[in-house]
Amino acid sequence: MECRKLELTINSANGLREVRRIFKMKVYAKVFIGGNQEMEKRTPVDKHGKTNPAWHYTMKYSISEQWLQHHGTMLVIKLYCKRKLGDRYIGEVHQSLKQLYDYAKPLGDTAVVCFPVQVGSVESEGQLCFTYRFGEKVSIEKLMLAESIASFLVTGPGGAI
Image (cartoon, rainbow, N blue to C red; front, side, top):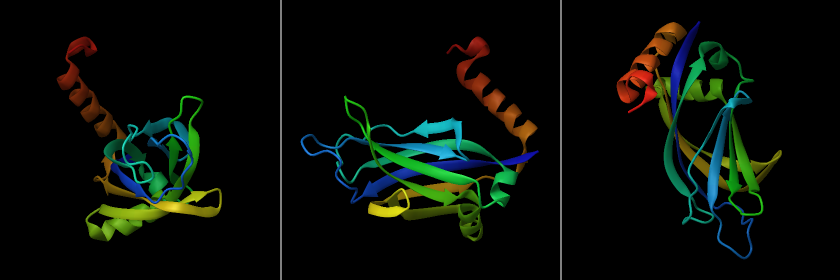
């Protein structure tokens, strides 16, 4: 089986709808690929940008080559406002991995994009901007071996530094 590395940097959002009236908004993003909860990653909370948060936070994924061939495999980025009484949903962006790959391929497999933030099927306020880069196609076995070696070099035997 073949796969590619995907390096995704959540840069910023702007003009988001205000979901807190009294206290300032502290926004973070949750990222899902293909609806797989195990692949969920989060940005840190932006405590200063309010409705215009900035993270410049990079996440790395290993993506099956098959996922890049189907329009149904989605990259989903959901935005939330951090609150003590439960986080409040702001909106989300859905994009097909195939469309992202096809768009970036002639640009050297890298692109910077901005998409409108939606609530359900309705366009909400604001937009989300991110950068992404697809790596070269490799076999999953080679990728797993490379990740194991890198992990060993960083943490040492037994996982301790």
